[in-house]
Image (tube, rainbow, N blue to C red; front, side):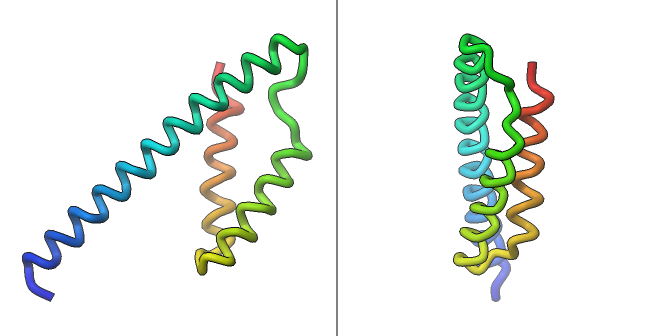
Length: 87
């Protein structure tokens, strides 16, 4: 691999990282809207059963993609925790 190829690969990784963060921002906005709806309905913000189902689904999906399920679980637990701490 040449230095130019390394630079190009790094640019591609930077682009993907930015796309991932764009998706996280979109997801956070949806979570905010969901929390507002739950608040209006008097529902609890956190649904442990739904979160367990979500984590299991994301682990299985990751495995089908060849991504370690533990990595997917770690990512989604961090995303869920972010939602728990939002006001």
